Length: 119
Image (cartoon, rainbow, N blue to C red; front, side, top):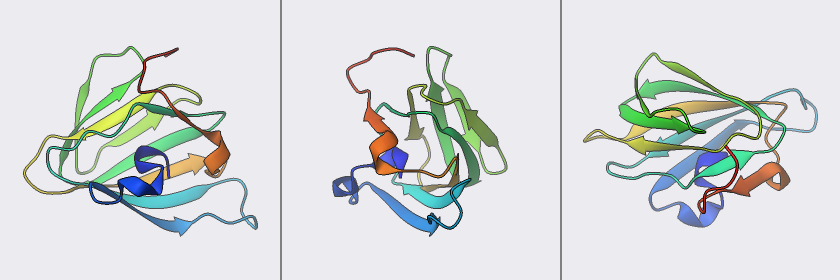
């Protein structure tokens, strides 16, 4: 799943795929958990709209060149396709959110954008 991909970052960010199957190519849903003080890598998901539904915790969302925005439980964040993004846990407990991708998330659509690049 995008914010923590590749899976090797599991100690700081955990992903649970809830729905991501060829039988439903229109959408995928994953539950993400980011530890306190952790900021995910800048990344983008090519040709895929993402929505983060914040379930628990407080975070700071950065999308493209827009100013960072605080997010908290109940917020929904829409991330346009192919736009770089990252999220930071700004609280003392875990930041937990659903990541809903349309069309469904595919690993080959993930692009690391840590070195900057196009917004």
